[in-house]
Length: 296
Length: 266
Image 1 (cartoon, each protein chain N blue to C red):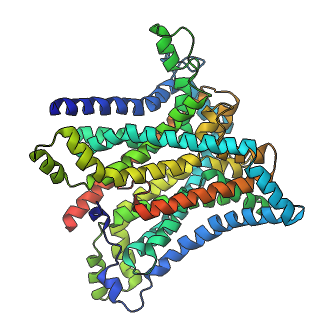
Image 2 (cartoon, each protein chain N blue to C red; image 1 turned 90 degrees about the horizontal axis):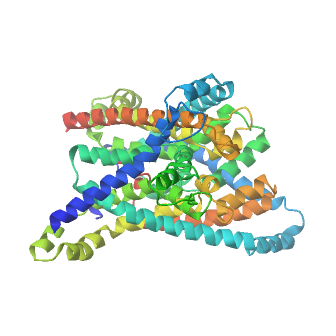
Image 3 (cartoon, helix red, strand yellow; image 1 turned 45 degrees about the vertical axis):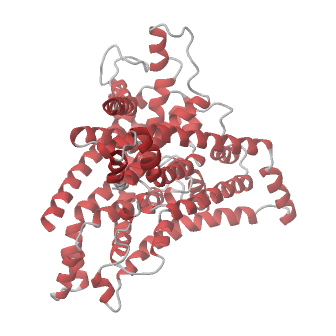
């Protein structure tokens, strides 16, 4: 499992021998860009917003407490985690067999499945969300078809509710899961599976006791990355959700666009950011960050 | 029993692939609808929505903004990302894995937070609606993608070739231009394509920073999805899907060439 990850973190022998290697200096433009364009705005946004708060530290802490324990925030927090959990489980269940199939497939069928994963993956999120809006709307394809074959007489509410959010987000996040699982499964030594079968284990027993435990690493990485991306999600729930599907990211946006309340937006952003980075730290511990976008 | 399981798996994967591709194909078909509203399947076909997309001054302006901002983001992030990827692969230093994971944080941090923070700074600096600034902001998001693609792609380039060139008396700069760059070129081009795509499809940062002047295609789609869904969006979406498809095809060709090089080198 870890064998495939052990590719060179060590530099070339040439770099090691040279006494003063200038190569690390090539990192500077990238670091500078991230610091100036990413870190500075982030820190400035938090620090300045909190500093500009009128009324001193005590009042600020009081407002922070009342905000973070307010009903809308707690509801959004619960909604966000619930949606993230369901989406993670859904894409795991849907994606696991696909990833497994990819490890066994060759030739055109392999290419076709990869295309089916990668084409949506690299299509704009807003386009993908729009296409589901067309499919799930009151007069969308799904409702029209069901009505035409007489299954239903009234259109089903498939959008502007929790179901729409779950479908849309699962569709957007499935490729991350499949690519992560596939990368992990490709490293599984299949001779172990054959050995178990040779010793007389049934197919299901072999899967449960040999293959699945070996793939757990990929399951954990995939679940983490999907969960991390889910809790910060904005576009799909904002377009496909109803009034009971307010996620934290949407609440932050609303705080700015509607209430123009920078301190509240900053507080909620900070809490979301801390959780995200904590999960990313776990991800960093359990997996290889180079697999973040499933780059092969 | 086993054959049945294999058959069921194939059936399931085939169904899943249909579900994955269907939404995209349906939007492309809708874009050619001859009707006045979004209905599938369309009763007649026409190019009216594409005509409206390319004929409308506002959509044209959005397309130009997207292309310009994408070009800036692509150029900056590919250059910066290539240098970083090269250093990660060839140099020896402490904390390499930690530094890499820090440089990848822009794809982990929720875009709404990144967008608001960038909006805060741009507002202070009076840079809302500035194309160059928006391009640079997109470069921050695209750089981690460039980095990851190049780490995978440059992996196959043999460091011994550089060693040999250095040993034969080439200066570092000359070796970089004559050996490193040509060998890495297919990977760099792939990375550049995906960097462009990352900017071209980006919504939230553009939404906050575009102002009125620099509205990109995704921003315009977002605005009209929130007001009323007009069929022109299907044509714009189909156009974006077309760009993605072209970029994936180009990447496939580059990957193929990279594979051939690996064979001749190995």
